[in-house]
Length: 284
Image 1 (cartoon, rainbow, N blue to C red):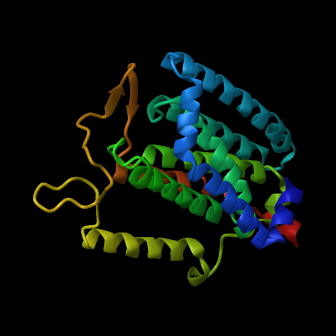
Image 2: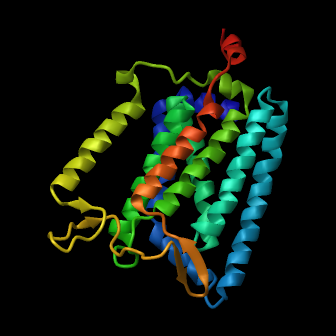
Image 3: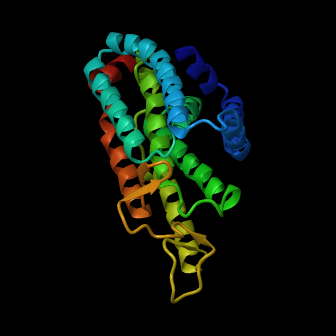
């Protein structure tokens, strides 16, 4: 992994092209891929379909976890890494049982883990990578919600954004487990005006505020005002759990709830990205 990261870091233009192509390849043809997969499993009972996908995902996870554990056990921060890896795996199981509708959505973890690895050399900062790749996932979900299938869903899918962020974390844990990569990673301390996260948040807040102020965007339908063309939630669910055929129970994460979960996850993982004194000594 170290040679790949350094090669991409030294070639930022090539890095941008590769990461951009990879992102567009799984974003733009989303509808066609969905139709193709549905055709493969056409006529198969949903439970069997989910079981097959889960088994395939488990095989992928085994190929992920075995070399990762080897790297972690050689790392001086092995206890920290094992704690966060175990926690992330636990959050993944929780997500599967609460906010995933079909197991094919497990592919999000693979896609965004890979994108995080490709994006990291552009910033060489874990915090910047998790922020900006998660932001790219919000654009992916916005594209699906407002352009690909505006008539087939009643809410902006914060469920997927959350599992996308967990996918980013899985990718970054691979990098964090490499002592050489971690030594190269930049410290998060920098002036505010040079912090891309702060600047990005300010720009996002301004843009979203303008959209809300001009009634282009709104969270819920409003009976008293003309309906905004960009609603985050078109139909408000009255219960915590939603059920669809055949007896699939899941929770629809609402906008404020989704933002809070994303913020808490971002804060929760901060200790994993910090560089201790011995890492700073390695750099020196």
